[in-house]
Length: 112
Image 1 (spheres, helix red, strand yellow):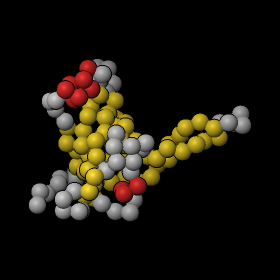
Image 2 (cartoon, rainbow, N blue to C red):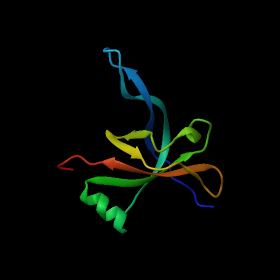
Image 3 (cartoon, helix red, strand yellow):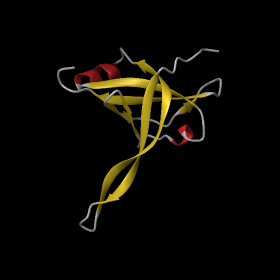
């Protein structure tokens, strides 16, 4: 059984509709929870190379499986150290059934 080093604090957000004051709505974000998370930076592969050209930081997040984290979906986003990540897939339960793993893309700011 592989041990996961969940050493980064990551906050997860779900999409919500917010009243815009003009009688309509717009998309917003609701802070759901913050968890200690393992982060694996992806390198290599055509998809990852293309993402780098688009200034994205592809990662695999690993969180402890619980009733909150099982709600994470590809329409959610995450924030870690001031960087936002778009979650790209539904989490997959690890072989040991203790963790959820999923891919996300961070938006890299120019000059970083």
